[in-house]
Amino acid sequence: MPVAALVLAAGGGSRYGMPKALAPLPDGELFVERAVRTARAACDPVLVVLGASMVEVWQRADLTGATVVGNRDWETGMASSLRTGVQGLQALGSGIEAAAVMLVDIPGTTPEVLQRLVPHAAPGALVVPTYDGVPGHPVVIGRDHWAGVAASATGDEGARAYLRAHEVTEVDCTGLGDPTDHDTPRA
Image (cartoon, rainbow, N blue to C red; front, side, top):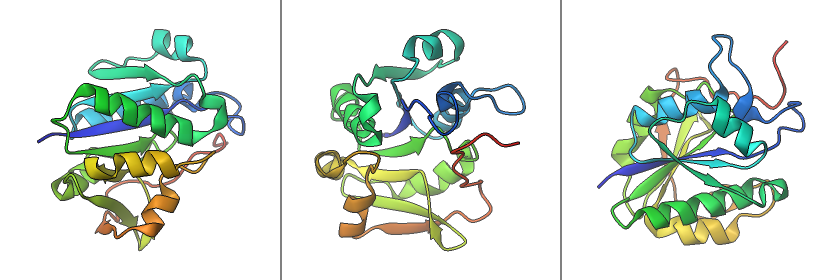
């Protein structure tokens, strides 16, 4: 059964100064393009949740191979994007056993990280990568947990509370990617 990727890319990037989906990397690739390319290397299908500047992202970004859904409530925080994404995954059908939830503002996520996590995916799985012992992203959420994660997500907190309340499998991904969250532009 396939493992989907759910790329959360709807935020306005108030601290960043622009929607992070449109933020360029040094090589010119947009954050959202990097996330989709990375996701496609290990997951199928790939679902991207857009919100802020959705039309501009749609026009500028190469989202080939991804299904895009819009989050009308993106201004309320990441939780609404997670709920929108879970609804989108459910609409894709029952063949998906789990989803790797990726944040667009962690462009250092690599296909190798996803390839390390995907073998642990199952309908009842909750899988968290660690980097030097510190939990990070992307998080793999089994289908059996989607409703609970969506119900518990509030504001800018996605699955964090749900994961704290449940048993998770930690997978060491040290050295496979850069877990840095880009909240502000690098100088």
